[in-house]
Amino acid sequence: MRATLQTDGGSRGNPGPAGAGIVLTDPDSTPLAELGIYLGRCTNNVAEYRGLLRGLEVAAEMGITDLTIRIDSELIVKQIRREYRVKSPDLKPLYEQAIEKLETFASWDIDHVRRSGNQRADELANMAMDQRKDVTVHEAFARTDAPEPSGEPEPAAGYLDASGPECPCGQTAGDDHALTPLLDAGWCPHALMALFAACRGGSTSTTCTRCEARIKWNRDPLSH
Image (cartoon, rainbow, N blue to C red; front, top):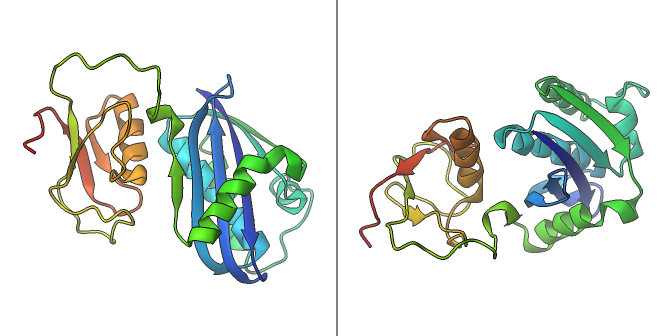
């Protein structure tokens, strides 16, 4: 499956409160995932790399095999292409992680774009910085052209345990949410993306990439 990834990172103060924006689209330019990630305090370049890393994780989670990357940081592009050496001790481990993740794709390329061509990713980064929390728009699961409900019970996905880090969306063991065309606002987007990728591969369970809770399809209707 082929997709285009656009990411952006920024810091207010350099270093200061930072965020990253991630936009993943299919070959028809239909959004697959739009994320704003709050990064706490870091520099612009660290934010750029962390946005790229999270974008690569999202693409892998969604089963993308061939990836085109477009970002507006010329420094990051030239470092990934090995045209510039990575001298900063803060950036070198992030660069190495990026190369490692890129090597998991069947094919990839990275291009520099002007800031005007990366506007949506920039907007998402600023939304995360403004709200000081992660922001998610998951268009692939928010379709308005979905068929009317058939009357059959909707499958649900539920947390089996929550032994890992605290979920940013407040999920706890036993929480269930019907996976309808319009998402319940309380559903954890990180868990959803992980579950979607697992289901594409034929599995019915996986582990949330953020809070590490185990999640699965629950074929029984909700009890509430």
